[in-house]
Length: 415
Image (cartoon, rainbow, N blue to C red):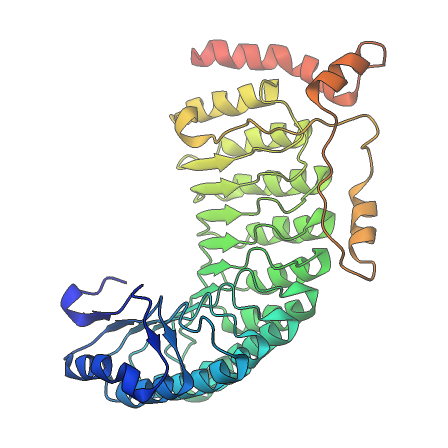
C-alpha cells in the first residue's frame, strides 16, 4: 500500500521510553493535530501501559487511519503491562473503520498478548494485512489467534460480506503441531488469503499437512512461505496435491523443510503445472539426483521464473542434472546465472543413508519434538576415497545414462 508522506506520522526508531501519559503527551499533540492521518509508525520505541492508554484515546479521533505500524514497541516491559497496553490499543483500533493493516511483530507478548488482541481480530472485519512475526505465541497463543480469525469470518458472514484478510505473517512463533488444526480451519473458512508466511515454527509433518489442506481452499494464493518447518513425505504429498489448486502462485518457499528424496520428487513434479511461479526455494531438502532431473522437466513450463534456490541438496553441483537445469533455463530464454542460486554447499549422499521417507514420517510423529537434524553426509574426499573399491550406486548409473542426453541438449541449444 502506497501512502503519501504528508499522511504519515512517524517516530520510527527513535528509541523513546514512553512510560507515562506525560512522557507521550508531546507526541500525542502532534498526532492529534495531524489531519487525514493514514499511517502511524511508532516502531522502535518502548511504550508503557499508561502511555498506551493515552495513545488509545487519541487513536479514537483518527478514523482515517489505515496502517498501524507497531512492531517492537514493548522492549523491557513486563508481560502484564504489555497485555494491558494491547487491550487499550486494540480497543481503539477496532473502532477505526478504515484500518486495513496492523503490524505487531517483534513484540514478545506471548499467549497473554494473543488474548489481549483476540477481541480486535474477531470483530474488525476490514483488516486485510496482519503481521505477527516473532511474538513468542506458542501453541496456546497461536490457537487463540486462529480462533479469532474464525470468529471474524463468522462475523463477516453475519454481515453478508466476504472476509477482507489476504495477508498473514506469523513466523518464528513456536506454533508447532498443536495450533495447526485450528489455523487450518481458519484458512479453510477465510478462502481470501493471497500471502501466507509461517516460517520457523517447529511444525512437523502432520501439522504441515493440515495447514496445507486448509490453505488449498484459498484459490488466489500467490505467496506461501513455510521455510524451516518439517515436511518429509506426508507434508510433501499434501503440498504436491495443493499446488494443482493454486493457479496464481508466484512464490514458493519450502527451503530447509526436509522434503526428503521421494517427497522432494513429488513436489518438483507438481511444479510443472504452476506456470505463474517466479520464485522457488527448495534449499536443504535432501532432494537427490532423480528429484533434480524431475525438476528440470518441470522447468520447461516455468517461462517467467526469476529465482531458483537448490543449494544444500543431495546431488553434485557439476552433475548432469544441473547441466540439464541450466540447458532448460536457456531453452526458456532465461539466464541461469541470474536465476539459479549458489550450489556451493551441496550435500553428499552416502551408501548408508538409504532410509525410507516413510520411516522418517514415523519418527517425526513420535512423542517429544526434539531437535530437527538434517544429517550431513561424508566429505567429498571421503566419498572419493571409498568409492573406487565399491559397486556403483544408483546415482552413479543414472548420471552415466544422462550424459548423452545432456550433451545432445547442449548441442541443440548451443550452450
